[in-house]
Length: 144
Length: 144
DNA sequence: ACGATATTGATAATAATTATCATAATAAAT
DNA sequence: ATTTATTATGATAATTATTATCAATATCGT
Image 1 (cartoon, rainbow over the protein chains, first blue to last red):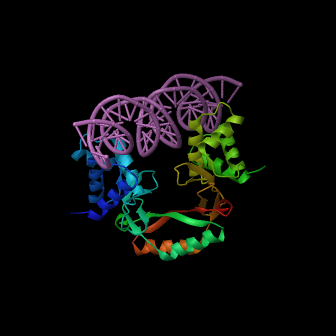
Image 2 (spheres, helix red, strand yellow; image 1 turned 90 degrees about the horizontal axis):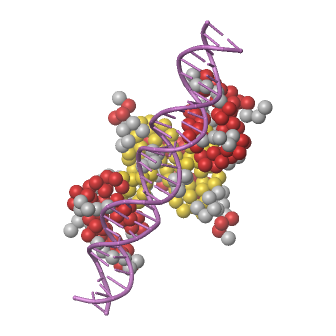
Image 3 (cartoon, rainbow over the protein chains, first blue to last red; image 1 turned 90 degrees about the vertical axis):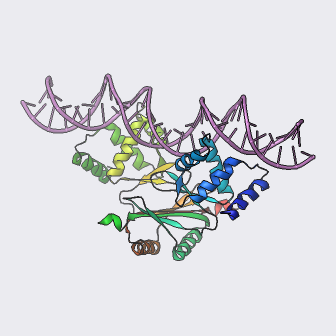
């Protein structure tokens, strides 16, 4: 059974909040997890629609919110304003390095940068909650 | 004459692109520069409207784009999705540390972080063009 | 199976920004 | 100064992404 852990997380969250299971939620979760890239709501909608033709946009958005609350999903917005959704369960925190030509991106992480951020926040009297770092440049393939 | 340099920059850009001067553009620039905080398009619109009641929203957006092209203005988007505009001419590059309670923010800059970003980009074969860094936390005042 | 409650899907509403287009303003040439 | 070509403006429609509304349906504990 693939994604058993993730199913359980969602199930637990639903029970926890006295919500209800539904086929739509199951399928949206599956499609989301099966897709190995950062989806837009529209992409998710279109893919789910193939399995559940009656699905509505609102359900996609509602379920994405639910997945976020459950800790299974994370929102990311890259420059142009499009919101994408990425897997969050068992995925380490990371930031993104995005190619401005082809849109390809890689996930990055730097403990050194994280430390420096903490330092800056403290210096200004802030208690840091989270941050957002996006690097934009041109990737190797796009430069030739 | 205040903001003489900035006026010249805009003037030069307008000449350069064979565009035309207008009172609206002058006044929008003035209001933008006079306001010592990061404005939304709406705030700018409302302030300009006091001086030029006939001003339209489209002109505000068009002129903001023009100011950005001229290097006088920079867009910044903080988490909630609202786009704000800040002074860019003769302002050093900086990032933002934002309070999630009251919305207050301070401008920050760390050469060390910048260097690390370059290093990461290079390691991944990217030539870095720009980045975006926002730190979110709770400020001193909001914690008591 | 019943009843209380939550979910769904269709659609309207919202909000921010951009496109359209007729009219007005600007700049350059006469 | 007048003309002329071109750009800018303002009103409004269109667009896009997301959220709210609400009647009909599905779920879950009894």
